[in-house]
Amino acid sequence: MPFIGVGLHVLVALFFAIHAIRNGQPMYWMLILFMFPLLGSIVYFAAVYLPGSRLQRGAQRTVAAAARSLDPGRELREARAALEGTPTAQNQMRLAQALLEAGQPAEAAQAFETCLKGPFASDAEIKFGAARAWLESGQAARAVAHLQAIRNEQPGFRADQLSLLLARALAADGQQDAARSEFENGLHRFGSFEAHAEYAIWALERGDQALAQRLQADIDKLTRAWNRHTRELNAPVLRRLQSAQARR
Image (spheres, rainbow, N blue to C red):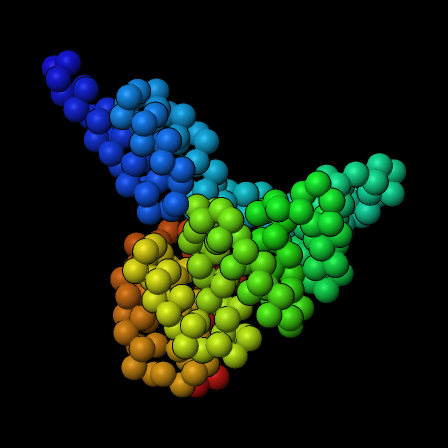
């Protein structure tokens, strides 16, 4: 029986080791995971795996959506007030994020850029927010620059989200061959619903019906067993996909 327990610890450590390699984590995690299989796996789960998981991001989106529905302007008001009262970098970041979530991407992009001029100039989270804001405000080239910088400086940062956002930014910037390559990369590495859906939207916009149909078949398989909560979490992407289909 003890042998079985040790074996399970090693299998869990191996799972996290594969995750670390695929997501570009530092190699010292290999040492931690296999020298201390149980403790190392727990630490990796808490420090790396859970913060980057779709489960946690989904929960965060649900809570944020609920708060916005009760008082849509509250976070933006509070963020502005906090920055006026205490003009710190943290409050500037909070305002930038609030502006983005409130549908004001141009102002959000400028707020994120202000954050990047100080001690957080190399912060991947801020660059990612700036990239989202620039893309949503129609300046895809600036989004591409930020995303490529993140990948070069911190390859493991939000690998699945970054890949899809970069693919969309490349497409918006007119770099269709590079966008296709990035979509394919995201699809093969992560195989998520989002990867399939975003690639299908791109294919429909390009008029590639064969590719869109193949991706839709995979999407149908992925979504067949969804419950209502999962469908609600993915509703924005589903709506964009349905809108792209309706235009064709």
